[in-house]
Length: 218
Image (tube, rainbow, N blue to C red; front, side, top):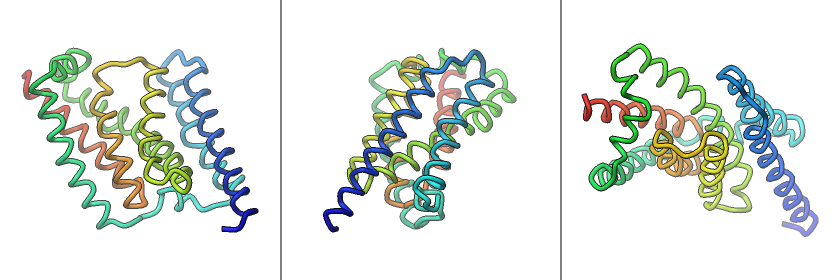
């Protein structure tokens, strides 16, 4: 890479990093009084702003940010590896922490008794947030930063996700499974070059985790 190309590339990296941080700051700082306003903010700063920046400012295809098909064989391999690793991690957490009890108390004492609410929560509410988070963190963040940070872009998106959830809603037991899997979701997206495998894996993992918790305390 020539010197001018390197300077241009670093300049783009700095601008894109600034766009990422601005989106997250506005997402956290702007007031939202209800779920409708939260959805509007999520759409504005986690979906529309990154897509407009990529298409209008950078003039690039959104497929280069993980929205293409990618490599499905690599995606499936990393999905299986991720599930196996998470199974081990959560086996240890179930044995040596209060995670199952605390998680259940935070939400699923209600959901376990109402199957319709459980489906609404898993497929609609979580499905929406998982989708926009996938677009932003696994798509926009990883594929914008990986040319400079390399594999560390995976850690960067996990840290940004953690800080965003912490600043917006505080730390609670409900986000633990998602935060743990977010690192593996980043790995899946990074190596498969597509967010679709990590998105589906995140949804399936969360449903299986929630069903496990419900069955434990049923």
